[in-house]
Length: 640
Image (tube, rainbow, N blue to C red; front, side):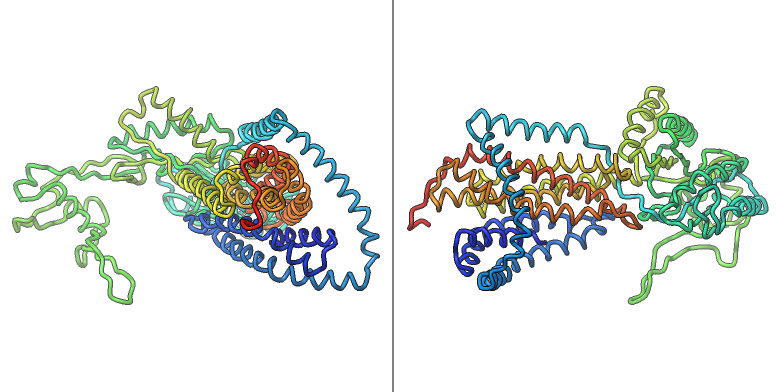
């Protein structure tokens, strides 16, 4: 927010140093950089606009920040060209009359140090633009180095941050036929095992604040709430050890994700096996489950439903000839069985101003409790005859899955794959596709089966594609805005060369964060940092290019002199604005606490990208500019 004010104030101070009056310095200094400040602000706002229209969790999480930043930056532009010049005029008038010397004595050593640094930087810049060869070397080294850094450091992607909720969820899948008393006994044993950790620390682990246990025939949920939110993951190994000791029970243990919607979903990839033959589906899913466990260390795989075909079921097989004789089809017979049991959903009814009500067709005052009762029930045929279900079908008792799920009308078994934190969702998807599914295809287990990935995998793919388009749109908007403001299509291309530098710095910042601070995946919020960088890092290049054009068109300087002068005069505002941004965002990266993990990756990318582009822009842009600025002409008095 202070960047615009820094640029205007520094330029006013520079004009004041030329011996101008406070009013003249304030007016000329503001007028000279007005175009550059406007271009910088518009590119920043343009970059945030596509983010506002993002859908899903990432858009909801970032939309308020994008709106607030756009409005704030626009207001800072207005303040920098209205309030700052007026305040500077009053301030310099007062300092001229009072002859303040104490402050100058304090800042004099710092000014000397700044001058030495500027001289050193300008010596390198002058060397880089001396001739065509040095310019090409400078451009090749910096741009090539940036692309090489990006290629080397780009990590695999995650969807959204895990967060640090204080809840650990253990999903327990019991064996078929487990009674209520046995399920209750499991819950009592779990509470007894966790009593040593309840409200007191044991073995250096955080104490447990709450516990809960709920269950059904299909699954049980055992939840553990940590008293120390930041140390919740330390309880996961204890939970895994305790629930793994329950005989015959399959368990999944995960820290609850702040973005998850269902119990036990969270950070996972669902692999869906769909087809018509349930035996083939179960065989393929079982083979994939074993292969995934071998391919990804410490992975947790939960089949939905259970792959054990041990649950008793009764199949009613229609006798088609008998059905035809009474004027019924197999589909109509199935609908009739639905009506005899729990009822058939035939539509809905909505009264104005009230909630929608489902319309269920069922037999009045009749409840079927067993398959035998259903088999002996009566139904009326389309021909008006009343017959028994037994006279139109035969009943077979078999064993199967606990439930039959459908995806696009096909029978489906899903594997919910929860990788360890060290393995990203993108890595998990690639391992499943390249190692697991390819092996199953080679073995012929997927010949009649359709396989797809859903859940977090779907969301990651969709959001990544949306962000890629947002990145392109942001770059195009920035280019078009700069083209309009600079009245040229070439100079915006020169300015856009700072984007690879920023990208390299962003990936480097993320890498350093992982090495020296804390593990951080490149999730969607972190990726948004690269979109923000487009609008931020071009500001420094805009200052140099705009001032160089002013030097040539208005001041009549030689081309090389114009580029060197613009670079030197813009060093101070460039490094001042970059320093305030970097140091202002450091607490976001380094400061621990609940919620800090959401924006830590975003902050590291912006800090790294801004730092890298600030350091190298002053060398790259002058070298590029020297190839194109000779096409400029000096404006005459009338043209000016």
